[in-house]
Image 1 (tube, rainbow, N blue to C red):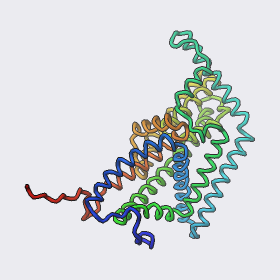
Image 2: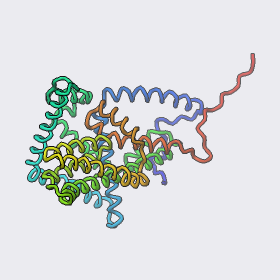
Image 3: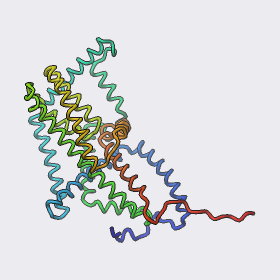
Image 4: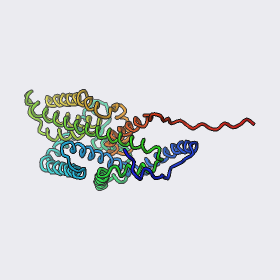
Length: 367
């Protein structure tokens, strides 16, 4: 990459003395940790919205690059096509769900509530837990999620946050190098090439990660629908009435590793046992088959081309982010972890001929 005029100009953080530069680096580490703690406490919502916008920008950039392989036109036009496809998909999903899934959503809610009440009643009769109601358990679960940031505390705030993330993502995807150069200008000139390497590597890793997530979502949704309809008929069961809705929810929840699979499994099994005992056991089989196929075939295949994250590390990150920031933190836990890992991997690579060691101090003569 040939630096432009902005990279050649002297930045505000340029320090010529190597000893002073080394001491400033140490001080900046402590200052950065302090600002990070303060940002988590005071600026959680804006930082999450910006992070969500960056993730969305990476998703748009990946679609634009993929479209460029088959459609050799200007990047701006390809980005416009990707944005229009995104809004078209959102509009179609909303319309289709609003016209076809309204009754199924109501039936699913009633089914889950009834099955959960039955489970609580059985647990109370066996003495496993005290007498509880669905409202009390739901309140305990919601209270354990963690604090809810003010900007995402209401439905209107959540909608506003989503719109802001989309707008930020579109602006960044339109001119990603503009923001790279702006951040690089704040760094010393000697570190700017390394910054560009880290930035490119993180963006590449996130594009692969999100592409893998989308592929996994599609596979899980399709497999769930096929097994709840055609698979059920093959073994003599009635096809699940809520198969389209369950397949859609399974595919969408697959974006959140570990947690999404558990939630979709609970819904699937609850619907199965509401139909019959045989359907309930078949639903358990479908859940185990889909998740094992995804875990042992799809994910390893994707991991070879994307960021391979340890499941325990991902779950720990989800617990921390979900506890601190709620549902938005849970959604962004996986991409943020992948970005941190990619940045650390690229930063740890030593440039040939350069080492990052503290400068030697001048020896003082003995008095």
